[in-house]
Image (cartoon, rainbow, N blue to C red; front, side):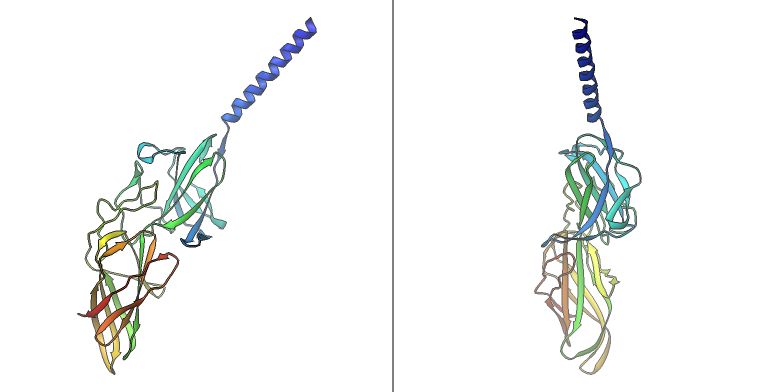
Amino acid sequence: MRKRTVQLMLTLVMLSLLSCRKEGNDLEVRETKFYASYNTNHFTKGESEFPLGNKVKIYCYNSGSELSLSSPLAGTPKLATAGSSGNLTPSGSIILPKGLYDFYAISLNNNLSPEIEFDSGRSQILENGKDYIWAKQTTINQGAAVSFSFSHRATGIEIKVNAGEGVEDLGLTSVRITPPKPVATSIMNLQTGIIGYTSEKNPFTTIPLNNGKYFWIILPAELFAMEVEVTVNATIGGVAVINKVYRANVPQQTFSGGILYSLNLSVNANTMSFTGSVIQDWTTQTISDIILTED
């Protein structure tokens, strides 16, 4: 009888230890690791390495959370810095208990801390000239690595001007556009990465020359008629001209986020006309039927 009692007590002790071990596993916490790359082409879903030193803000929520009604977890947002092979090192560890989580990330695609804050999943009014990139990974198990694939959320504008018939020694001295005006709807939804449209227009703004290209980043816009102004020096019909100005109205249309609108223009004696588009890293949409006439 005593032997059976001892065996029963040992069995109860083992069951108790197993139960405690199981409960301990449920409470186990692990540090989350993060990685980043670019989603460089919306058609092929290609990816490329994230630049060393780029800064990223990381947000964490319980899986399935509606961000307008939720608060970020684990002390996020936390600023992270890209290292080699796209690994992201947060300013502090992000440690979570067992469960499922949704992660969001925002960057200016450079080594500056993103000057963007979210309140209930909505940002402040954003600006032209900034390359807002965004990524998310949802339903991630605690302890699993999070791999962000970033995509552009603003709009790219590129203008190229080529010499047409009878035009030689073409040199651009200025390219200007009337970019979208930031308004109350020009904010980002952290959950979707979408930046809202504006239809209002700012005064002429000079497009900078970047790596031999007149390229700039603007906010998404709809029902928007952008104006373009180009100033050139050239030899036309054997006569040198200086600071010759051409202007045109781009037909009213939508400029969507994540798309590069690349314009090819050809200078002739008295006009400048649209001749085609060029595909670059961003998804590209053609703009047609543009005629620039001398101002």
